[in-house]
Length: 225
Length: 225
Image (cartoon, rainbow over all chains, first blue to last red; front, side, top):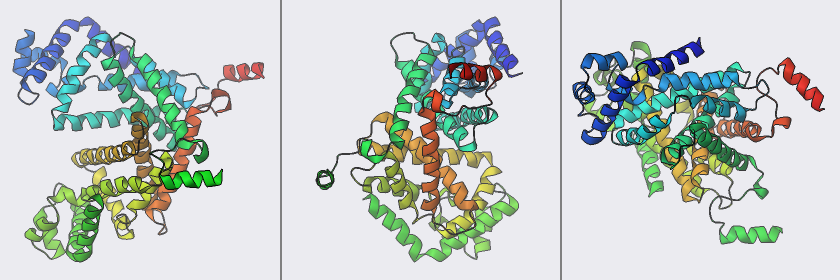
C-alpha cells in the first residue's frame, strides 16, 4: 500500500513533469525575487504560462510548492527502514531510509533546494510549517523503527539522530559542487554523527574534553598522573 | 548578564507569586474545562479574582500562560552548560544544564504540567508554538556547547540528544508518584539514551539486531560461527 503510494507519486510526476515542474520553477523564482507573501497563485501560473486551475490540480496552495515533497519522503523513509535486512543495526536502518530517498531527491530538486532555503530564511510562518514537516518525518522514522521491534527510547533516538543526519546531509548535498546522490551525503553525515555519539558515551578519561581546560584542571590532571 | 536575567525572573515570581500563580491556575483550569480557543483573557482574570490589566502585566497573551517559562529555561540551560567544569564531557554538560533547571521546574509547576499536556494535545496551533519553543531551546543548548569549543556537529548532536532527554524527563517527572527533582529524571533519561547511543555505533556483530532475525540470517550467523 505504502509502495503503491510512492509509485503513484513518482509516476504522476513522470507523466506530467512539464506543468508541475514549470509551476514549481516559476513559484520559487517569484518567491525569491518578490517575497513569498507578495507572490500570488495567479502570478505563478502566469509566469509558467498556465492558468490557476492547472496550478490547483498540482498544488493545494502556494505553501505546498515548498513542502509538497513531504508525503513522499515520509513514505520513502518508512519503506526503506521496513526493507532493511532483518539483522540490520539502528544505523543501517537509517542508511536504508536515506538510500530509499534518492528517487525523490533528484539533481533537479537539488538545484531548487537553495531557493527553498532562501524563502524559508525570510519567512517565519513558513519556517513553522518546516518544523511541523520535520516533526512529521521524525515520527514516521520512529514508527518504522518501533515496527521492527526497537524499544521506545531507541526509536525516538533513532528518529532524532536520523533527522539531524538528514538536515546535515541536505545542507551538504545542496552545497556540493558535484552530483553525488543524496544518499552519499546522508551516509557520510550519519558516520560523522556516529563518531560524535561515541564521544558522548565514552568514559571521561578517554574523551577529549569540551572547552579549554582551565589551569586548575590541568594541575588536577598532573597531580593524578 | 544572563545570570541577572534569571535572578530577575526568579525574584519577580518571588515578589508577586500570588497574582501570577492565580492567573496561571485559573487559565489552565479553564483551558482544560472549556477549551483553549474558547477561553478569553477576561474569563481568566475573572476566575482569578483579578482584572484584565493585571493579566497583561504578567502575560503578553493567553498563549504565554502555556509557554511563558521558555525564556527562563533557555537561560538556565545555557548557564548550566557555561558553568560546567572545564573538562566536562558532552553528557556532563547536558547534566549541568538540567541541574540548573530545577529552580524553574518546581513541584508546583509539575502539578500543572499534566494540564499543559492536555491543552496542547487538543490544539494544533498551540502544538506548533510548542515546536518553535523546542527549537529555540535546542538552539540555545547548541550555542552554549559551541562556546565551550564543541565542533558544529557535536553541538548539534548535543542539542538534539539533550532535547530528547529533556522531553523524556518531563514525561517521567510529570507521571512520577513522588517528588524527586526534575534533574533526577533528566539524569536517568540521559543515561538511558547514552546506552542507546552506544548501541547505535556498536559494530554489527556485538549489537543486538532490530527486528526479528529471519531464518536466513540465523543460518548465516551459524555458518559464520
